[in-house]
Length: 390
Image (cartoon, rainbow, N blue to C red; front, side, top):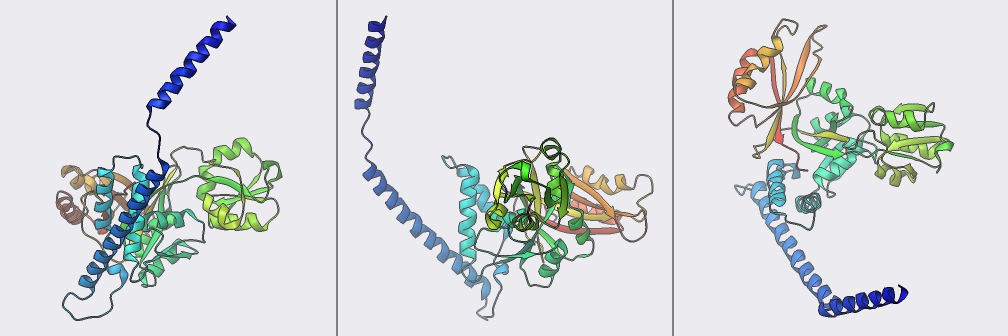
């Protein structure tokens, strides 16, 4: 039996040796030379693209030869970027994943746009929040990100022109709507220019390395809610403190004995904390949707959403909401979201925030909105913007 086993092993070894000899040897030096040549071509093409972007800037800045300074924000076209990224996904056949290729092209467009002056984008800070991650995902790293203390401040800075755009959270797939953002749109003249979907991983972090050393946990109320069941199971009885942001929670975890935080990986890196347990969110597909806010509407991209702010004279009358929405159904418009908020006009009176597919300037949505406007006491198009690309 032992002799037979040794013979079998020798035969297998011979077959492996023959197969290895039949395969051509990998010439690493040649492969590296090929990579160097491709890198040179990529570099040249990037510079060629940047030069073309400069020409676009010149044509927009001085169409009639009159001169005059124009903000970089005037060159930013979210509908154009969305079209470019969709084509990137359509032609991608690997091995790079769609997400990776889209991220690379976002950075290329970000760098080209920033040649004159980087875009200024306000977000709910401080540094290390998920809102900051959303800014970098959507605009790339060549922007100037401006952290602010409150959602209302983001609106104020954009409206005053101190920031070109703002990024604010609007809803989470687990915990629902961020009401502060909705309420700002009731009185703000700003428009929605885009949406960002960010996969959220919540991590337990602190100066300590063991859960046994945790006396209290700080985080934004939304993050605490997104990890409620995990905390109930693994840290029952530990005090939970809601703070203004996850970055503020991370700062407290850095400065206070016994305090742990729930936040993203970036916050752990910024504040020098240990990730005690990664990814403690209760649902695997935990995602937050953010809105990009600006001062004007943009053209259609070919795959868009529109957000409406509506109300009727008496929202308590039977069939009020049905009458408001009927033009959408009649024109075969898909509604993706509806929320109600107090109107602040009188008690028990409400306004409705509605998301639908389509662009406000294009049929069939345009026809539906014309009819809907006639039936509404309040009618505003808050924005028509490209659907999130990955």
